[in-house]
Amino acid sequence: MQDPAFYDALAQRALDGQPLDPDLSRRLLDDDTIDLLPLVHAAYRVRFARWGKTVQVHVINNAQNGRCPEDCSYCSQARTSDEPIADYPMKSEEEILDEARRAYEAGAHRYCMVFAGRGPGDGRTQRLADLVRQIKSRYANMEVCVSAGLLDDQKAKVLADAGLDRYNHNLNTSPRNYAKICTTHTYQDRVDTLAAARNAGMECCSGLIVGMGETRDELIDLAMTFRRMDAKSIPVNFLLPFEGTHATGADELTPEYCLRVLCLFRLANPTAEVRVAAGREVHFRSLQVMSLYPANSLFLDGYLNSRGDAAATTLQMLADAGFKIESDHDLSAVLGRVGLENLVELNVRKSERDLHPTAAT
Ligand code: SF4
Image (cartoon, rainbow, N blue to C red; front, top):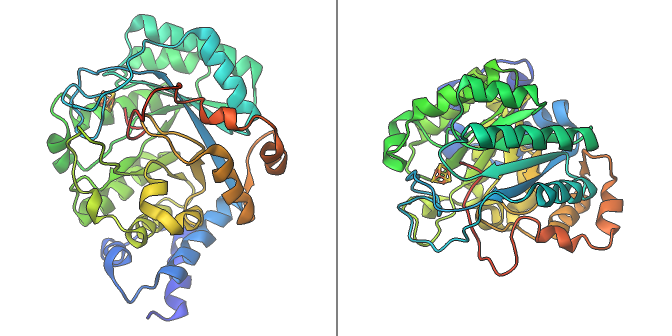
């Protein structure tokens, strides 16, 4: 058991903008003398200083789904996956805009459009830019994010010029581990895409999938890498081992370890939007609401290929714990709105089974 001054110092260092010491980071993950509740409280102090009790709710639109030429081992759309998936081309403009409206009405702070595949061609980049312009003109206060794979400087500029707020591209795992989870592109390809997005003027959203064979030191290095990259948003996914995919390691994830990981990412990235992403329901289990003390953001429903909790259940969990949402809409109004259950179907078309493990394309 650590002295209360230990936890105070931990929070204060982060609040003062000082980086975490690697040895201390390691202890946060596996030292039994560092108790979970005061550690979560230290992380919460840091979260509160930047975000108060506000939760940023993200809604993902899985705007295109299908077998991908890449071989990311955690992904059911990868060419190497045996998981049956729904296959559909890019949704129509009308459908995507309608889903953007429903996300807005459900209190989404940010609307994320996700496209499977290695990266967009010139034609798709232009279509994406047109969609971004239309959504931004209708819902000025709802931020728009795209996750569409590898980008070069030119495509990044087209999207940035259209007003895209943020580009998501996850690093997923450590440089050493990357070749074990994917052979069709490299860790450096992902770093280069993030640089292109940032150089074009967009914010970067980049996170990882915990539980894919990374060492704890590598996990700590990733937390520091996102800090150096000035990632504005860090989705922390926890591996969901879908049948037919090949990534392993999820068995080692316990609710306590997952919480410690979130605390580490919060303390290492005091002002970033740290999101408890895929795996929230599975790996945090009864500790799920505690994830929002270090994290300040979640997906309302669905990741890329996986249904999350029903939207109303998640929103009720936020309300029960006294959190607010960052939205044009009040949380109680959103909860009371008839038809909220429709949102559950936003990301997953009827008759489709769960599709994609993480926001990680
Ligand atoms: S994560 Fe993205 S790039 Fe990798 S296989 Fe899945 S859809 Fe393709």
